[in-house]
Amino acid sequence: MIGPILLMNLILVLIAAILTLADKFLIGGGEARLIVNKERVIKAGSGATLMECLTAERIFVPSACGGKATCGQCKIKVISGGGDILPTEEVFITRDEQREHFRLACQVKLKGDVEIELPEYLLETKEYTGRVVSIEPLTYDIKYLKVALISPPSIEFKPGQYLQIKIPGTDEYRAYSVASSPSMHDAVEFNIRLVPGGLCSTYVHKVLEEGDEVILTGPFGDFYLREDSWRRMVCIGGGCGMAPIRSILLYLAEQGMPREVMYFFGARSARDLFYTDELKALENKFPNFKYIPALSEPRDCDNWSGEVGLITDVASKYLDRLEDAEAYLCGPPPMIDAAIAFLTRKGMDERHIYYDKF
Image (tube, rainbow, N blue to C red; front, top):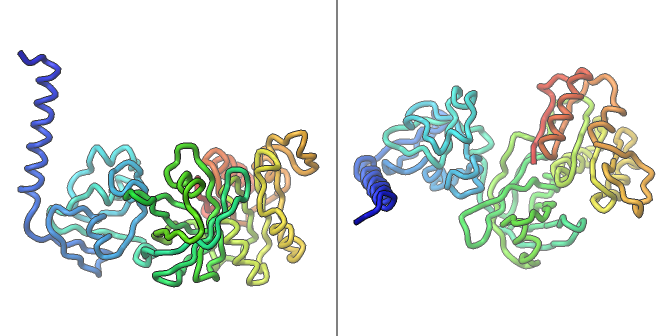
């Protein structure tokens, strides 16, 4: 006799099979249209996901999980069509985002015509093949990675944006901010921290070697230098939040540092600091640039004479009224939240605070 638990499992398997067949035969077949930004029309077989349609047209959206609905990064605005939001999406899409018609591109299937709206920069994203030309330690747990581009041989991006690195042998990607200036068109640099159990960071730190090929997609992100602004800048970073701010600073330095910039960088101890000589050289060259590092837990062997404490507390001590300033923040969410709180208290308009939470 079949037990109740086994019977229930068999029923669930049968239901899943029926739903799969229904999805195949009721949705599949025929042709549907994907309309992008009211202008571009993509024809696809009914039943394909938005991500599959876009990827086939070489339009790449951020996605770390390869379309498995586990990362929540492939949010796009669905203007019409697409059906109701699925349970697999609800965990990633806030109520406000739902009201604005955001969906996960990997979960929405074309059952008819679907119209979507994409940021213009996503239409410029590409897949790149590159070769590792340098990989070396910056700290005990952060590596510098430089990739020379092979195909296409050059890239355009805004300082502060990120690329995705494909993990070999999988369909998964991980996002890393570009640490180099966008004036370096034929190569890109990254700062990659080793995350315990992290697929991509372990691959970079333990397996990747000079001469190896890598696949990149992008550029992505709405965190980037606002070049049309002449406001003085406050930059606050921690850990690998150094990378996008370094890209911004190198780009500004190439222009003669036209804006006043203060950069506050937080680390736990001296062994977590990197690019110190480079940043001090910029400080010596440009009087309107100031670099202030701080250690939250300096060790006795550090012989540290600089600032001590949380970087947001140190920055708050240095800064006064900020009505005429804008901020670029990169680091862990608690640091970002604390920075936004004190910056707005000091008069900065939240519309002028740009951030990337790592």
